[in-house]
Length: 205
Image (cartoon, rainbow, N blue to C red; front, side, top):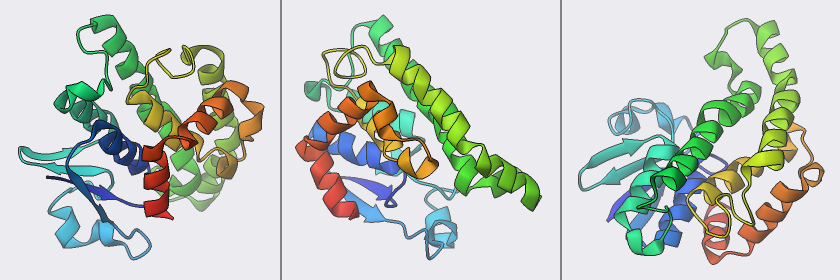
């Protein structure tokens, strides 16, 4: 059985939903960020990065959301969470998830984790103040050209969809009205109807 290390409100939500969609054997272990458990020696021994998600598997530890989502999809092929066998479609999925990880999540983090980039408090405040602008710009690109249909890859649900849902759930807190993005908002509403999402939300409160 795999163990997902998760903290409520974090990007680990995407992996939680994917595990449930895949029908994989898993359990979830909370990491209490408010109590700085991510920095405790016990957790650092599991993930030296001190972040979530972390997925403990029979083959070792995985970190980083795109890698974990890909692993889940390829380990549970019957769930059809990646278009395996179509290199172009898989590359499209990887491109989308990489954009969320490397650009959109980083934009969001400037609002809450600006100390990662500078110890200048004025600079931290400036980074935080710019988050609505960068998040709006990133999601404008997603709205305009990255959603291929009702789901990210078109008619087929994939591991891209839990990831988009998770990051879209941060928009209101980042000063970007979800209603300003009709296609993203419709995707968000569809995701909320899925039992996997309802289970993950119930777990995290």
